[in-house]
Length: 218
Image (cartoon, rainbow, N blue to C red; front, side, top):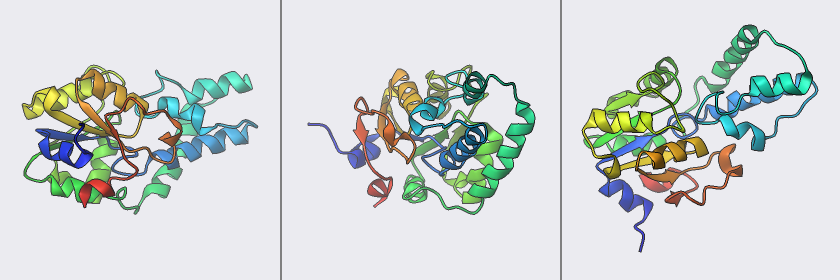
């Protein structure tokens, strides 16, 4: 009989959290800026299409290339992305952590835990500091800390290496297909917590799937 997600948390030697969409709801505001840009050009961007790049980068799937292919136009992406970034930060500023995320991270203080993200340190570290969660984590592993980001296993393997833990003894909490593939490739078990974007995906190969981190922090 498979153990419960709560038991898996308790028995793991280290617990790794994805950041975007797991600790903080950043993915929806990012998606909305892309959706608005597509609509400005007369096109739709369904979640089912956009989710292909969540948890990874534009090498996996690129909304930039997709819009250029649909429109037959070229864009000044430096300008477009700078404008999007302003709107994204404005949307996220002041929002609390995802339900149950802060409580679970805090409850793991004294044991091994980390945030492992395909995003940059500037992005992840800054928001974790604002949420006052950095002090509860043993390490933060981001883009640039390993050769490849998710869906490659490198970031999760680097986190296990930094904490001196066997990858097989680590548990990962993820919200994306790219993240789940990455963790499984690293030999780690995965709890999937789909968010309002990634709920369209089929996570049947996850070890566990729950609706909210609140169920793990109670």
